[in-house]
Image 1: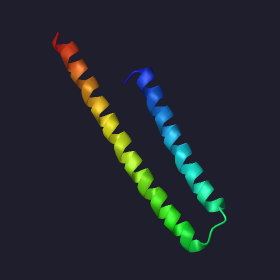
Image 2 (image 1 turned 30 degrees about the vertical axis):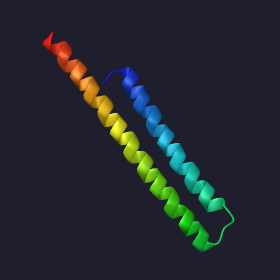
Image 3 (image 1 turned 60 degrees about the vertical axis):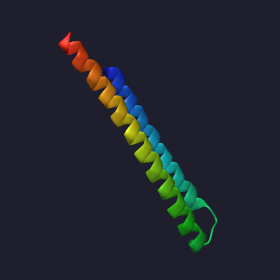
Length: 76
């Protein structure tokens, strides 16, 4: 893995960590009833789950493309 790819992965990890922290803090500090809070938490966790799956799929696709490029370079 090159330095650039490592930097990108660190950035993405930091971005996700920040998003999760921001969502959690925002929900915990919001003045809502327990039932409303649980519903919001459920919705936000589903959104985060979907986003994570989407980003993981994108990274897998990028990895496959990079692996094919590398294989072609090695074959040449």
